[in-house]
Image (cartoon, rainbow, N blue to C red):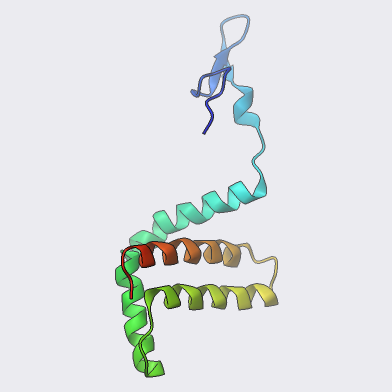
Length: 120
């Protein structure tokens, strides 16, 4: 992240009278992709992480159940891909459903984390 050359990252400056005011860098409109990425991050690193626990443990529970149902081993990466596919199918039906887009982003990030942690 680039530090603002006006406020040096603190978000406030003083006007000619010495009165503090918001720096113009705080008024910059974010690109929609930044907003949805941040919202997805906040979900998977906040409430959903608290609700479901460690991604590897959660995906492992799902993989065990699906392995039993399907009669063959299911990897943690496959769990993430299947959940992503579920969200893709929902988006096909309701393209403007923002929560499904956030979840899709989240499953990609969680899938990578689970695989990186050695998910089989």
